[in-house]
Image 1 (spheres, rainbow, N blue to C red):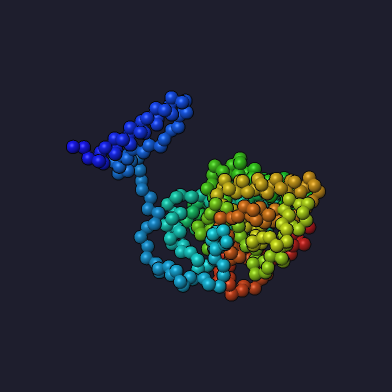
Image 2 (tube, rainbow, N blue to C red):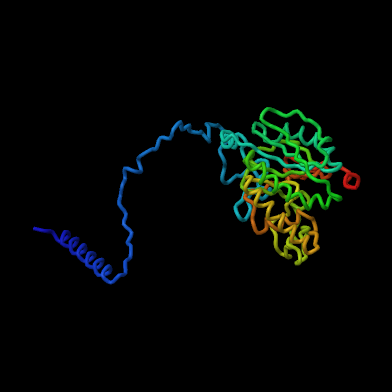
Length: 343
């Protein structure tokens, strides 16, 4: 005797068959999803030729992170869009080296030594060799209009300095205006094939403490040391609506410094291309933004949020006293006579 369950199944199958026949007959074909279970495919492990497993997290012994007792309670450590803000005490260098070390990364650095700024190259490179991305391959790209004055600094194995000749400009404003263009062009022609990450730094600065893989991210910005503790109404944003760098009153997250930005080389390429285009737009309209390229950088990061933000530890100023929130100064502008070196 056939059970009711079997009869019900047969009846259901008959009705579905009739429905499909009628649908096809009327010329309206609708594809119904059909899933065929195949559990054995999920248990198969493919063996690639000469596959070498990379242990991203080697066995380490470190203090357990405490959810209710974070290391830093005196500063903001994450943005409203969930990008980390990097401060001393918010990361473990040993863990990060375990993640990034096996990837065999090459980190690029661009720095402009134009006119009298060539005097800063030696100290910049010497301090970088002590503190910047220790244990990683590094390419320093020194953009200069006076290659013969660039000193030869002894570098560690796997690290090299490359001189990138550029044309002379009549003023530092013109130099600033063409910086994004020069970086973008160099990425397109050369560095996109040579480096994985690229940081664009200013040459009149010195490394005082470690700058490591905690700074790596898709696109990285740094908070300006002069505005990290003031309301955004005091930020020197471009306030003229006629400028492509315009930011209205009441908008803005942080004020980012133009002396430090970086990220994946392809992301830096896209960023510098966009900033160069907005700078050209202003130039066509005979406008120079309040803080030149820095204004355009801030406008871009308002609508295209950085994936990681560096605290002022990574962009300090030697002329400023160190407040209690800054536990460690890593990278800082040296004290100098701006009038002398820019005239």
